[in-house]
Amino acid sequence: MNFELKSLPEDADASLAESHAELQRIVSDFEAGAAAIQGRYNRTPIQREVDLDSCRRGAIAKLDEVTRSLKVDQDHFASRRRTLRVSLATGDRLARYQEMRAVLRGLTGPKRDAALQQALEEKDETVLRAVFDGCASLCGLSAKEYATFGEQAREALHGTELLEIENAEALIDAIAQQVDRARTFVETFGKETLADAV
Picture (cartoon, rainbow, N blue to C red):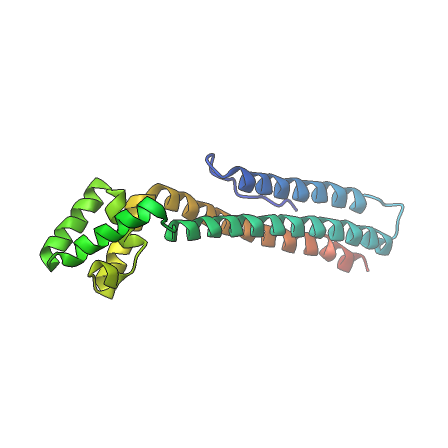
């Protein structure tokens, strides 16, 4: 009974690639060890099961380490996502943002919409961050307009990085599912043989 893991994309995050490689090593080592234990015919089936159970516990402990590593990676990417949402402006940037918000507040609806659309098209970081890092009322926007523009501004400012984070988070989920499958494989390996032998 062989266990197969799905491969990772070539551009996978290094830490995630290491977790995946470790998962492959754990499963391969377990399969080799378990096969050797099952091949020991000089021991009773119960003795082999005790040895196999010890091998299982070792593999599960290592799988737990991979799970912890994935949790660290998950926290890292969640932290990166949070930093993209809020960046505290200080000094000159804060003054520029406040000035830009005052200008936007003073514009009529269609002119403000045109100015914001132009900022999106040109990826004008000052205007985008002035709105993105502020609140709706400071920019003269309704809550709905602010939410819509905020998403567009985030995409314009951080689109590539957000995509990278989303891909990494999806990969973490995929590896976590493979760890769960590996855990089930390890926990059930050889148990049907023992039932037949007893």
